[in-house]
Amino acid sequence: MTSNLVKINEKISLAAEDAGRDSADINLVAVSKVHVEETIRPVLEAGHKIFGENRVQEAAGKWPALKEDFPDIELHLIGPLQTNKVRQAIQLFDVIETVDRPKLARAIARISEEEGKPVDVYVQVNTGLEGQKAGASPDDADELICLCRDELRLSVKGVMCIPPFDEDPTEHFKLLKSIAERNGIKNVSMGMSGDFEKAIAHGATHVRVGTAIFGKRPGY
Image 1 (tube, rainbow, N blue to C red):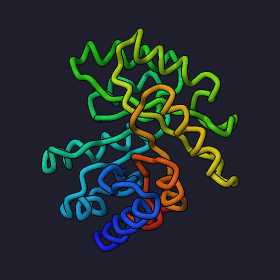
Image 2 (cartoon, rainbow, N blue to C red):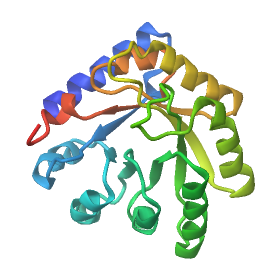
Image 3 (cartoon, rainbow, N blue to C red):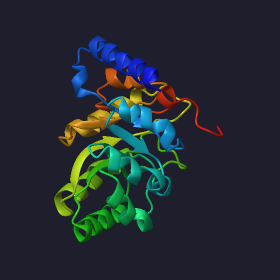
């Protein structure tokens, strides 16, 4: 695992150099979904601090214990969030990358205040307008960002997308970057194991990499 982590960090540095960017501005989110504590721990021990999980229940089964040993990690929720899981998500995660609708944003704002725990959020944009995929439409993204930031006073730190699997992601990356820029948002979460270098070329600040670090997920 640790050798894979080193290789990915080297690729990130090279991609940043090719794009004329500082690699320090690019954050690697190690996607640990479906992997067990024993698989994740070596990456933590190597000093990596930012991790991503898809499901609240799965994360709740392994990360509280890991956080006791590694209290300075930053845990991102990168999968869809149901409103009935918001309280648990806020208690566990530091960043919720998948705010995609007003109802969810309002629930996060209310419960975050009740819990006394602020949480950073990213607005997820469905750049490919895929019916089976979460995310606000590109046309609705500005309005959702405005609601989160101005009315609900949420800490909107970024935008996020997952381009269609069977398309060149370039135009999707450009679209997400443009949404971020016109809304004055710094963080752009895009790019995964197969396309993170291209995402860096188009302005990604956070790339989400799982398989290239942890190997194939069990059962897949």
